[in-house]
Length: 576
Image (cartoon, rainbow, N blue to C red; front, top):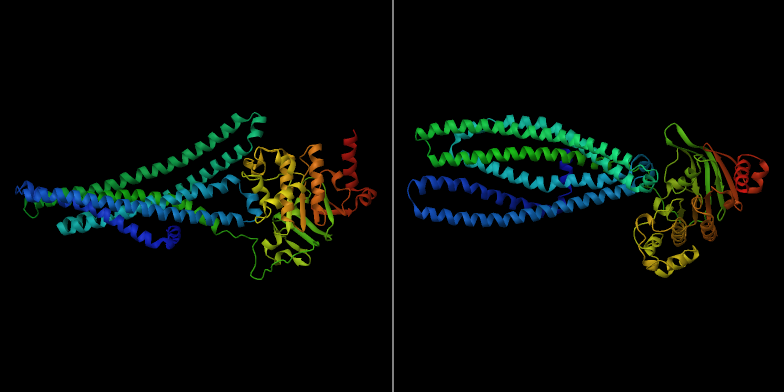
């Protein structure tokens, strides 16, 4: 129950409301304890003694008690739901902040759908543990304790017989609890798999349709659905076994009560009304035990989800500011890689002993075959990953010794695949600098050659562009990304094959915008088309994680190495 206690810690800010909720639950449950006493008086006083006054009192008492019960029931439902919703909002917010701080290496290993499942499916499962299960647990516990007290008051010997079954029930719940937690964990994993596959399939729907793979995707989804069904049915089997097991043990106790209680009525030790009341309280005792076993099973399933959530919360963020991290002052833009080695996986170096220097304002091009390490070099500048050895510095400051926020605030990135948000054009560009005015956004758009096509959109800058900007062409999306980068006004700029996916006409427009963007900034350009980097101050050729040659365009052609070979292949093909 360690995770349940940890979950309850999130309730601490709402303790007063929770106390009020528990009071309402106990009072509502207490009303149920009045009914068996009414039955006793009906038998012993109304039916046996023909007492009309008592009958009137009982009728009035029922109305008053049920009204009070209704008031407290409303209080318990509202207050517990309020606390539960607030706690879940807090947990979900903490989890989202955690995901925002996790390094890219975490996302390299996790599917998007799996990450989404933590915040949706797992947190929702935790919510049931707080809201529905808490109400039922306190309610049934109150009825159980209250019934037990009334039973002892009526006949302590019968009560002892009843209590004999409690250790057996506790042992059964302990055994089933372990298995229910395990099956609950499996269910959450299967739900994460379904969410992940659903997200993946929908995100790639154009690819699915272009390859006519709808039937294949349906088959994959059905397979995951079956696995989820099997996991759910395993949980159902356990729950279905737990309830009758507890009910049978309770029936054993009731059998003792009926026999021994009947014996006492025959001998005149207790009245018939007292026995009926005792039996009613015994049923009240059995029902809470049965329901608490169900609640216990549900809590175990929810705790499997909590274990997954807390597991993420406890993960090491890896790339985080140290206690001695300094704020990086406004930089000029000198970037130095000094003998840098880096591995995504231990023992498999993606970069080996890379050294390069970019002076402020220079355009640095990174060229090489796919998978050679160009993007890796670019990703290390804003410290998306930590290097294995060597150092990376900007204006003499080691990137590991400054705060990540102050470092990344001065670095701009224009990726090959532009990610836009499903909001307005204006807000997408403002993402570059949240305090920018509308006028500054329009100026940035003009500099990015984007203002003209934006003005032609149905609502101009206030047009909502849809999820990931799919309503726009590739060139238009890139120009919005460039406008965003211009607005940010970074000192160091990274262009990761920003024009490689564009047609010739779009490339010219985007390249013109990029040329404007690079003026006066230290720029790292990952080049697919060599024609875009002829004017670079330095070109670094990367192969298998090593810088094998560098120089200007003319110098590298004269060396007749890999760069010259790549140049000849591209331009021979283009001329052909």
